[in-house]
Image (tube, rainbow, N blue to C red; front, side, top):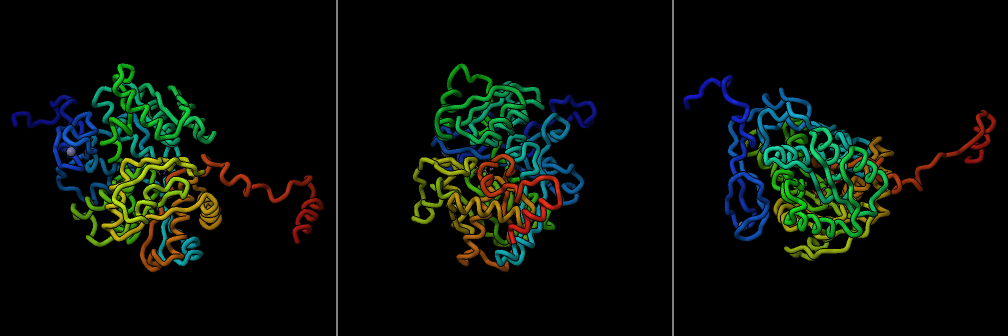
Length: 426
Ligand SMILES: *Cc1c(COP(=O)(O)O)cnc(C)c1O
Ligand SMILES: [Zn+2]
């Protein structure tokens, strides 16, 4: 208590994890100090960051920067995080989707459009938190196993932060995601196998001397990484005028994003930043990789792994780590899990583009497709305030719609030719 003058405190006095106070096991509750741990030593369960929030006001948040750091007091990051080199993601637009709502028969619909992030997917949010943890733990290489978007977010963040990057992807990803993941420098390694095999490979590498000093954002830094998804919940609530939506449709790959959006909503209620009210969480998967949807429909509590086969490659995780937690949350909030075929994904991508001018990647086709399916089935309440997530940019998955998105005509540069071409069409 002797050092009262903050001006004479060394920089190291900034708490590296802000208001976070420890880690706790999501299965058995065992607690741990903040550190580079990601699995419980007692039961191997996943660890979660716990906090001791001081007073957090709407005004303080609103005075913050137009990116995720406006919520720094609710994240495991130092107070001066915004001053360090990072991609400053977030504060993406929440679009009032009147046309799509009208088409589907939903009275109040919003699209949270995360394609506007620096590397054009929601992954910049989670990587920004993991990057801070990597710095604190002294890791010099930033790494990940990725279904595509994460690799680009990691290599870009590493470039900005001056860290080395080495990322791993299934070798058969979309061309645009491969380019995005390699253009920022560092090493991009294609693995001949599924995402689940890439992920297993990374876990092995962590135990090998080769992986020493490496921060795998979604493996050994996963506890911190996952917290970044809470910012989606905070932003949606703030952009709705400090109010929770009644129902929200969220895509599920590993399920991490969905569980943390729920955590974010609960924190806002607990902090008194929004009024307490019930909300329903709906999970969306592609039929070609629907292990959580299958478990939900079968009434199971465990998730049976599958071998993915879908154009929604960013969601193609056959063995989702957070699958059981997704089931818990969906059941607790009165939501549902649904899946759509690849054809329905493509239809939904075109529907969103044509009604709202938003070009989503296949993952956005999955959420909008599920939104449509659940509305038509009468599962979603047409009068309730509804939010659907678009988590990535359509430019990354051009092949999905290329067949349907061509020039209406190709003609010589003359009005006659134009008239002829259009007369032809009646
Ligand atoms: C990674 C990703 C998600 C969600 O991933 P989770 O593993 O469930 O957190 C959603 N959409 C896109 C486009 C992604 O890249
Ligand atoms: Zn445990």
